[in-house]
Image (cartoon, rainbow over all chains, first blue to last red; front, side, top):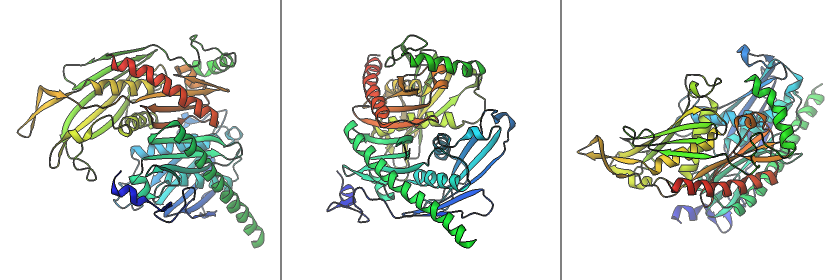
Length: 242
Length: 259
């Protein structure tokens, strides 16, 4: 174990003083964009992420139209200034992959069959990145879809776990992500607790995986409560204004 | 979407409900694997052709000298790319790689990288000069489960990769100097969920019928995972896919090592 590893956990606490099963501070705002049908903004630790939904609307190119259901596309984009070394604008391989797994995750909850031949576009913009951005993006996207009033079977709630200095910990921050031994982003549909996104890289035994999985599901359930709270208060605010 | 396969979806799903697969395999049974190493052995530094059922993938390894990443100045570099060539399927199109191709490359990459299969520390040449290992996955026939076939072909090719001779700052093509240092054999194994069942190594028909899939790349531990597909997975389904991947991974590793 290197010196750098040891610093990540001190007296049972993490770099920022969090416990192993503690999330970073999360703030969710609903309906932050005027033009989008639905939108959400999340601050999650140092992450700042915005998501917007357009549609159901006419779908181009035409060959993608499906007479049995809507076509949902999700695009994940890192802003050039969101990371310390400027990211070249445009899709790279990492963002194409994240867009794909995020689309898959959202496809499993949205009731696409209600809008045949149309397209639903979900855009995730990472304005500031500090590890776990795909989880933040998916969490925001799911709130934005709800805000758009698009029927869904459930929310998508997401959170990452990882292994740092041999310990399984919840919701890695950047330093932990860089030096940690494993990263496992997970997204679930909270009512059934089933997996809609799961990726992992690093080194884990099966027992460690079980522990990590449980921790991630508990983390995602906490995220779910915050999503609900944000959506409910957004509706209350509208009622007060009226 | 290919209409014939689309129509077969119900048939496959019903068959699975009865505990059967179209090709008569058990749910925990892989298709036959054939690996031919050095398939294009004259020019490439390493190569392997894998036939996994109807699926056919050729992987070629090229080595070049280039600059290391700034955060690892004394380590060699590996990059994995996938080309789903239009000759492999009527649904593949020419042009830059799309989501499917990129996903395959990145999942294969993670399995190799995270298991530290390539000893990148030994690929250092001198300051600002390291070996760069290009792993190029070339799909030739899409018969389902392209990820596993690609991952198996990649590690099989890497295990039989020769290092080009390097003298006075130049690569001497056609002359060799030892083998690429590879420490372990990461193997990706993909399972799909159809109805309430978990099946390993999906055929193309089964891929169209699947609700979700999970790829687990293993050595003695789990090194990479990727969930795909638009359905959901329960916890026990994830765990049984992991068990299956460890088991099949072991068998496939034996085949790769016996080459």
